[in-house]
Amino acid sequence: MKKFILSVGYALKGLRFAFTTQQNFRIQVSVALIAIALGFYLNISTAEWHWITLCIALVLVMELFNTGIEALVDLVSPDYNKLAGHVKDISAAAVLIMAIFTLLTGAIIFLPKLLLLFHAA
Ligand SMILES: Nc1ncnc2c1ncn2[C@@H]1O[C@H](COP(=O)(O)OP(=O)(O)OP(=O)(O)O)[C@@H](O)[C@H]1O
Image (cartoon, rainbow, N blue to C red; front, side, top):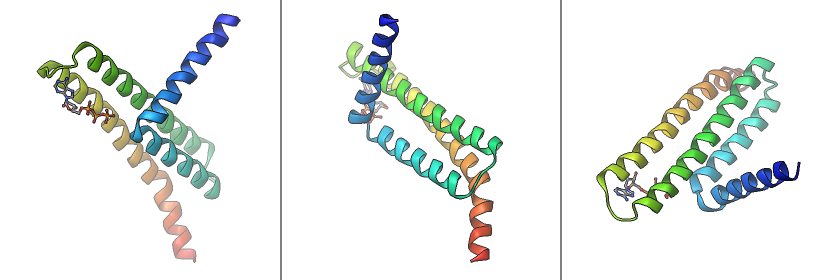
């Protein structure tokens, strides 16, 4: 049990590191909070909540992996190295793909409801 609590502590330390050092992570957390507030406001369905929470979790997980990979690359290759650059670029591309998918999902779920709301107003 003590080992489990320690592991959770280390994970929280990782989260704090990402939050304090990565502007992108802070932006993604802010957008996630806005999406959650919008979800409550627009009373989205259970299935829509599944999509939104899945997208939020995956974007944050991808950003955390990206942050870890960047730190590892800086550790093993502090000097310029073409392959190190590729590793960072590929890792960033993975975040970008997930961010685009999330944007599309958010638009599919929220846009029709927002348009209805503005039409009714
Ligand atoms: N050691 C390196 N060798 C070669 N190219 C690198 C190296 N470090 C970074 N680069 C290139 O510069 C880009 C930006 O790297 P950087 O470490 O600044 O990442 P970042 O995406 O700006 O992340 P952050 O601002 O969160 O640290 C990389 O995507 C890569 O193309």
